[in-house]
Image 1 (cartoon, rainbow, N blue to C red):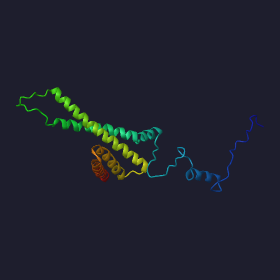
Image 2: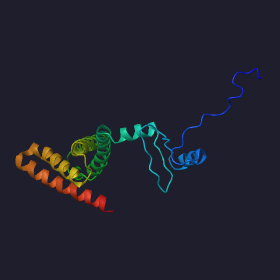
Image 3: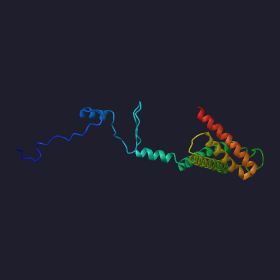
Length: 195
């Protein structure tokens, strides 16, 4: 007789076999074949040739933030401003508004030249930032609405953006601007995806 309670009942409860008649074979089969363990809730990971990489919550958050319409629009605005500033600086440097050195006119000082270059650069930068922001916002909205990522999104966005920009000069200019911008967007999209 033992002092400890239930000293003789050390046997683990035996469950009824599910696949085979032998519980040991059944346990082995369930371990190797029928493993129902999941790494995350509601995610079924298919078996593949390579290693399975599960994104962490931080990676999912960053990916969602980078793919959002607001981020795309902001980046297009910033990049457009930078490209416009570079083109404006180049345009201002080759500007033929230089005074004739042999004429009796007042010559421009360096400060006036730099002030003119700054205004030209800033004007180009604002225009390119506006175009980039509008195009990106329209394209992302169309892509979200259609639910498809293809060449039509850029074409539609180019048509709308070109039409809005050209509409300042009239309806005819808006139609021509929309068609031109749509054709340009389609050509660029085709070139970028065909490489």
